[in-house]
Image (cartoon, rainbow, N blue to C red; front, side, top):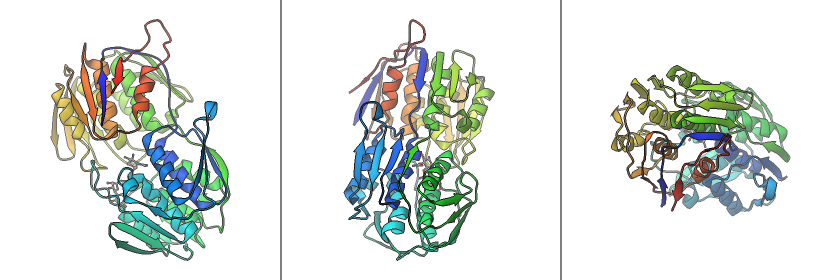
Length: 427
Ligand code: UD1
């Protein structure tokens, strides 16, 4: 169990650098399974899911080399000798994205045994579409004792139409199709930047993929892929989170090393709320302390408003004048943070997939529980930003890698005297 004690009320002043995108790094690491040669990945974030995926790949026989010193965000993966094409329950239950190894394993090794992920705090999150897609590529699938077993001598190209847009499903099957015989056409694909980033890496490895970033992706299968070097895109969720933190906490914050082009729906909504910011090619500068106005939001697949920013947006809505209706369309149970916010003094009513926030509310510090990682971020900002003198205990049940975020908040480089000190203690 992690526990953070936060003393808030300080403005955020300075520049903060965004890490590489975890959700782009995870499929990129799985892509290394597709070749015998080394895949060198730069800008890998230092978060728990990445460590879990490394453990998973090592358990299969992968060689992993971590950069050190200035190269500490580099990871080199070599899957020359994959002996054990299995993702065990112990790992999959801690990280659902482990299922990303399913497609690459069947494509390269001809077989895979991957644990069913089971339930999740934010909803059922099945992986039926990954399985259905693999079957369309010619894999034989059996499910037994909580495991999915997939096998195919060689996958063959197919026509996949996703019943529902799925990010990791699109990535899993795109990887599988790179080594299939013939052409695969996938329709109703996820258009997230992380899908496009994976396609860039795969094409560097010798794959023939067109259309990633649109809803139709075409893949001409090849018989072999080779090694490549690739830099992971910046984390758009981390960037968006910092922008909201800057708007909430006052001060003058530059969020650097990000891609504002990936933040379109969020920035448009923040503009509507009255958040003051300026973008450059790779940064967003946000000044806080301005009056905020309520605005409704609905989460959607990219390029819509991301579900992973919904909780942070709710924190902002508690400080905006008026009524904000927040509709969650991607996951069925992603409002756990609302009740924690209510305990801190927010006025929020949840009805099904809609939360109605009346603001602005005067919040006070309280001990709160976090079960969803994005929610955790939101509560931290709330505590930092709007409570005059809070002593807040923030407890997260299962430790995870976003302590990095706290650290970054703590180590902001001040541009002016005064700087940012979020007085955050981790215990
Ligand atoms: C990814 C992101 C996660 C983000 C989510 C939605 C990674 C590692 N994680 O998760 O941070 O919150 O996209 O943007 O990239 N679904 C099915 N059957 C399937 C697959 C999905 O019904 O086989 C449903 C899910 O239950 C959910 C919706 O489709 O309701 C979207 O899920 P999906 O896009 O697959 O989310 P992830 O890829 O798991």
